[in-house]
Length: 171
Length: 75
Image (tube, rainbow over the protein chains, first blue to last red):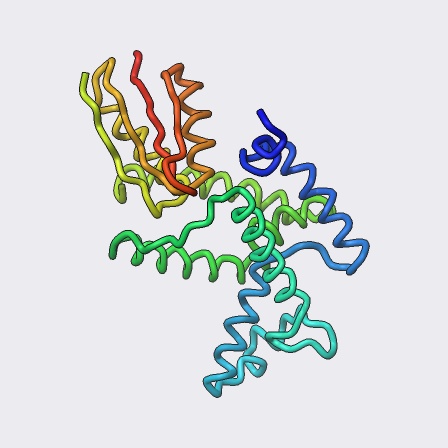
């Protein structure tokens, strides 16, 4: 197999990806003082959109109680936006390099409906748990935070139930 | 020896794997399942799963970012 095929085209084994993610998360933490997190950025995207429509989410109880923004950062100009854009840019480079870029369509109304439903559940869940499988799990466990392990256990339970429901009722 | 084709285009994990699993249960020994997908992770996890079941499995990239996976139900 050529070097291009092995490194760029074929998916890497899970353990290679895992080790690299771990190393890069440590580098990120030492250089910026914050570990990797994704959904907090989505939260602020949403808050920014509400701002555009004239609402003031910064006065809401949730945002008054919890802030992950540094002084001077806004809902759209912050650390999390940079991270999320970097994830999208990185994936784009990888997929173009492997010649696998493709515009994806919505398959049918059912997919659209369950996509929205899943999105709402996931979004709501990440705000209760302060992160997704990156922020509340992948970055939490190496920080010696107990909540990372709790997330891990319930993520397994959730994935198991989710697969059963998918297989039995949705597919 | 039947040949069944399932369309998993635009669907993400774990749907292609679960669809394959469900379809293969209904098929007879010697039948071949052809699964179309445009999700690269599905190629990885379906092949890994099929090998674990000791099914004969192969795949090919038809277009950029579009694959067909062939699984023969051998037992």
